[in-house]
Image (cartoon, rainbow, N blue to C red; front, side):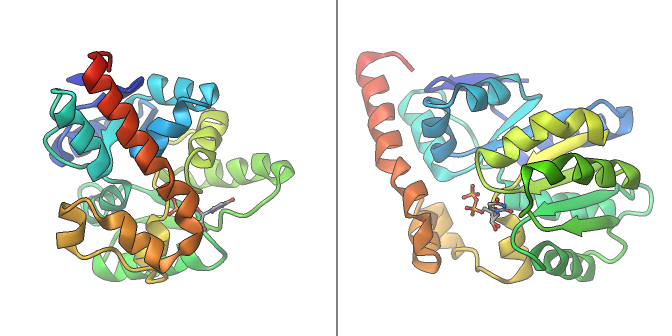
Length: 246
Ligand code: UDP
């Protein structure tokens, strides 16, 4: 895998088709993998959170999620060809799961009560036959975690999507992947909010122009803390370009 280091974070220079091929291979071989979808906020958070940094740098695949990452990769002369976002991986894997010869078993874990179930209903409609074997919200106590991991293990999923936001989802995966026993774990942030219809995704032109964050902030002003990491990310990238240390 072609890999770069971007402001201290390992990122695999993969396209969507390559990421999917990697994931399917791990499912077929039942060889567990944590797939991190890294965006600009993760780069900033990981610089202050050594646990998160360790998890990302040890993950089996780290995809470039977000136009900020692509922008910085060009600025630092390590260009990444395309975005591989968590929200896109959810739809692609549901589509593959619906194929009769594949039938990957998928679990949706995260978001507010009812949201993961609603996303599962919508995605089953869109991809008839998709094997979404269960869904559960992402609000529980630390004491409940082990029980939840056990419930997932009983369903024998191939793929577990965890949507708690960064860094909670990455830390949960690192803690419980062995107990759950699935092949692939992917932290997918607000994806269930999007597929359930709770929030709308930015128009494609805004995504392409790197303006998705404005749209998300408009829909949910609570995202301000995440948006505030963007200027910091830009400054870090510009400083790295100037000093030649990236
Ligand atoms: N969430 C959750 N459990 C928590 C905190 C958050 O399941 O303890 C959910 C929240 O409902 C939302 C998602 O995690 O669906 C985070 O979405 P966000 O868009 O903030 O994630 P990002 O992709 O920006 O990291």
